[in-house]
Structures are given as structure tokens and as C-alpha cells.
Length: 294
Image (cartoon, helix red, strand yellow):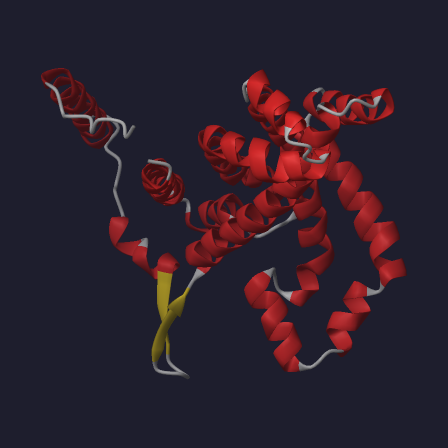
């Protein structure tokens, strides 16, 4: 059964008007009492700039940071879902050893600050593992097309080690929370579904693949969407290892222009644009999945 579409109520309008009134009051106080010299006209040039050599408008610092944040969020979420799904299956395994491995991973990640994990991965992977694997050497000696592809999908080749360190950190950290989401989703499936599939002679793999996971997926989707939004916000912390994502670019621009309020209001708007767009997309997907099951 499809959920009824929500209607805008009088209370919603009152809340919206209150928020707008509060925002207007704050802006008025800043403008009048603080005598702040707003310079919004400068901000667009940090989003896009005109390249005289090519004769085209190209992205500038803030858009570069936005794209880096999106890359980190996309690949980090993908890896976190894979890791979280595997660990979630181990969490509901009948093997005590498997459950202990997954539980130890979850507790370790949930009880360590992400900043500590970032530094561990950055100094360990960047300084020790990357030279052994030879990714930096490979990218330096690769063709311009390969370097360009890597830059579009991930980051500029010169920042490959730091980007991979940040990516793995976010994926492993967020994967712990997705592990619990997957575990809860699987355990929420009625016991009768397990018994019925067992009575039909289905193997554990086919039972999980065709019976349990499809039912759990719709229940997992809102929580997974929330975790993706959380990863978008958590990606700001990797600026401490000079990943040029949105917050890092904002910090650099603030230090060079002193436009503190304008820069951070713009960054706030860009974060809201990312998270709200994804939230609306997930809402549409939930509606589609609900219709497909009717």
C-alpha cells in the first residue's frame, strides 16, 4: 500500500514563516549593528571563472571542492556498503567466530574518533603501503589519458595517496554503522519467512539472495540514505590531511580573502544542495519500490 501524500498544514507554514523571520532578523542585526560590509559579488568568481586561453567558463575552487566531496562520498559509500553488507551477514551468522570478527570491527570503529583513524591510515598507507604498491609511480609514468581518467574519477594524480587514505578511512568508519543497519534489516524479516524458505529446501545462499535481502532492502533504504548523507558531512574531516574537498577549499579562501561569513554561507548552501538533492532522490526511489511491490 502506497503511503498517502503529505499535505502542507498551517503548522508547516507557521514554522516556515518563523524560520524566515528569524533568518531575516539575524541578517538585519549583522548588517546594522555589526556594520558588516557584505561582498557577495566576489563569491561567484570562486565558483566559476572565465578561462581566457580556452575562451570558456570553467569551475573554480569551490566547485572543485564540491566535486571532490562528491567523489569521496560516492566511492566511500560504495565501499562502505560492500564492507557493511559482508560484516552484517557475519553479524547474523551461526558461526561464533564470524560473529566475533564482525562485532570486534563494529565496536572498534564506533569507539575510535574518526580523526585518529584518518591519521593512522594516512601515515601508514601513504608512507608505507603506497610506495610498495607503486600507485604513485604508475600514475606518474602513465599516459595523459590515464591520468585524466583518474583525476575525473578520483583526484589529481599528485594527491592519489592522500585521497585513497581518506577514502579507505571514510569507508571503514561508515561501514561499521552500515553493518548494524544491515544486521537490523535482516533480523527484522519475520521468522516465518526463514522457516518457509527452509521448508522449501532452499540453500542458505538462495534463501538470503531471493527471500530475505529483497524484503530487507526497502527497510534498509532510508537508513542507508541517512548514512550516505552522514558521509557527505563527515568527509569534511579529511581536510586535515590536505584533501581539497569543499571545507578545505573554504578554509583556504577564507584565509586569503577574509570573507568569512560569505564563504561559509556559500559552503553551507552547497552542502545543503548535495544532501537535500539526495534525500529527494531517495524519497522518489522509495515510492517507486513501494509501487513495484503492489
